[in-house]
Amino acid sequence: MTAPDEAISGLAPASDTVTVLGLGPMGRALSAAFLAAGHPVTVWNRTPGKAGELAARGAVVAGSVEEAVRDGQVIVACLIDYEAVRATLERPLDWAGRRLVNLTSGEPAQARAMAAWASARGIGYLDGAILTPTPAIGTAAATVLYSGAGEVHEAVRGVMAALGGDGVYLGDEPGRASAYDVALLDVFATSVNGIVHGFALAAAGGIEPGRFAAFATGIGGLLPELIARFGQQIQAGEYPGDRSTIGSAAAGIRHVINAARAHGIDTSALAASKGVIDRAVEAGYAEEGLARLATTLLPVDRGGAPARRG
Image (cartoon, rainbow, N blue to C red):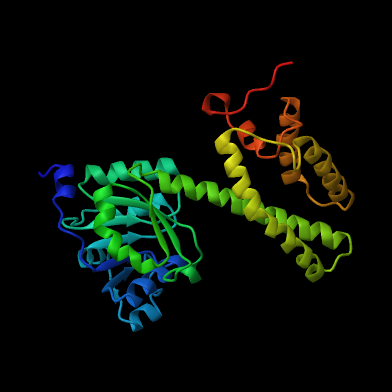
């Protein structure tokens, strides 16, 4: 039997035949982008009947996973989770000369485990994370992150360029792309919660949604500069309180919570935020800038800020 490393390193450069496993909204968008770039595309989905316009545009609809993998040199998985990817590919399949690019959302530990699973079977594996919504796929606005074996990335880079925009390779640690993904999803999820909570509080105060939105977009416009500034401060380990302080944030969030409670609006997310701020104040960081909060969330043995003495 050929050793896994030999099987991977001995592969010829990837051809332009692509198989997409999974035809949810993102899987369909990926397939359409590959077709638009002129690649022969085979698609497969666990539930039949989702190929729709893809078949009309020339995609081959495989009747089985075995057929789908046989048709492609670059196998792109975009399924519900890593367990579904492994369950789909666990059966005996011919991986000779093929690479697997997994664009399924998950966690860094799952990506590392999947890379080990693939390596043990001689499969050239690359993990990835899609950072843009389906309408951006195939356009200059798309961003896809990749991590894993460098030789696999080099082999599939030309094919994956069909997805458009920036294809960013983050190195050979297979969990790195997923680490970016979950951290960025954290930003999105907590931001959406803040937005809808703000709309609810505004409505309770008799504010018309359209008028509130006009002012809320102004708040949103502050965020790009704030994120960049926080990144610089965290990198430097310096947290000046010249614009705002953790102490002032503690006072501000109390007002928001009190107003929301007065209207009977759920305050659980706000209470969690207040808890983070209060712990930072108790640790002695009340006069520092808000970027300091990021370090107080981390355990001390992983770079988190210890409480100040005195």
